[in-house]
Length: 149
Image (cartoon, rainbow, N blue to C red; front, top):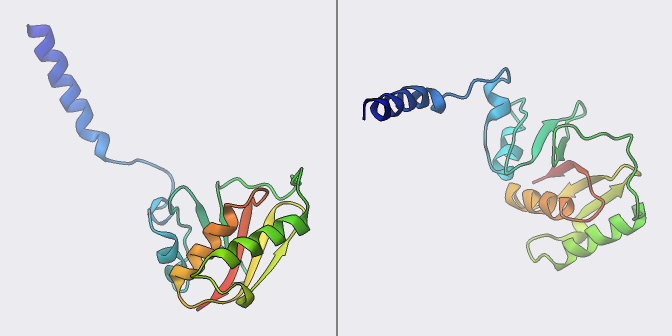
């Protein structure tokens, strides 16, 4: 009985610190936000942000790079699908989404699966939806967003 009590007490004391997240990363890098909130914050804050398993960082030219992970390597080409196929597929996904005006967004794709979105959308929520739709296409590894609202 004393051993069980000792074990429970040690577990409770040891577990008390589990609510503290100790990391070398700055708080802004650990901050959980929604994509649309990160898009709005990007106008004034430096980021990076981590919404829903994604990684968003500011680019030097004012855009945002959104990836599935922090360590995206642009030197690794996409295999099995062409740039034209990826661009066409992203455009078709946009065309079937009632919230996105597909003709207002220009889409460019490179050999590494980087899709660049430029244009004007109605809101940060629409921009976030366009980014998520693009990231959902096979062969898209990252999205550079220059969308405005």
